[in-house]
Image (cartoon, rainbow over all chains, first blue to last red; front, side, top):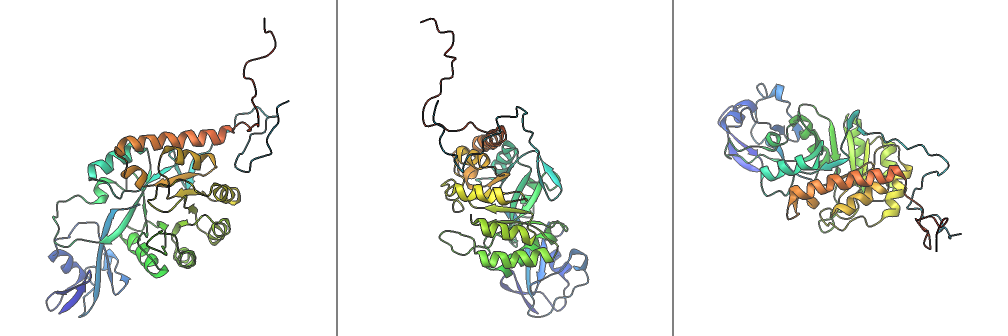
Length: 66
Length: 281
């Protein structure tokens, strides 16, 4: 299935949780936050939350800013 | 008798009948006390090392950060901002820079809270125009209301309108941060009378956010009675950011001390500093 990941159409396989997506992106252990369809998915739900086709996923981190 | 100029609304003079030295109290934001009244941004630095050294030299204890998409496929060993600016050492203040609507600003704050494990202190800024980066006040008010309802502790960037500053305070913002001049302009404090009025009206900390270009601008903000100053470009775009960070630290301290000490009145003519009695000529 395809999702929209950080604005880009992305193929993620038949089933995937947020956690498996994070692992595939080699972001495990990094300080990130995840939003699906404009709703926060708390870290505690990364394992249980399954992605659905067309989900809009944003993965963000902290950068320098004023 | 030397003529005393009419009172200048800019100047707070001390009551000369009391000789007690006024005491300063440290800046307190959201229950945390800060020895430094300088808040710095972490953007526009040439390298992480330069950012780290400049922040260190500034003496700041609260630093701002932005929230952006993770670069997917980036080098996993590359340090991130949170490795350089440790949340254990500094109070992190996530901003909503780049947001042009209340909706985007609220979304950004929620992501920041998740990113920082429930930390709910944010710097709200909702911009209205790319050329001036002036705040969109109506969207700012809307976002502030939603964020406060959702339990955020909101430090808010706004224009230098005393009525809006007071309105934001009454809504429950924990600090109000009027601009001195447009973001990144380095023009200094353009409307000092308004800043002074905002300070006089306020019972929450007032911090000048944006517009400071050099050390004297920071001192002026503090002499006007501001509780602190937030700056980024003035340090990051200096030829020597680390030295400028140190200059800003001293300027903030000097300006605050001058404010607390209470300046002399301005006079139209001279007033001799050496006694006139006992002259032998």
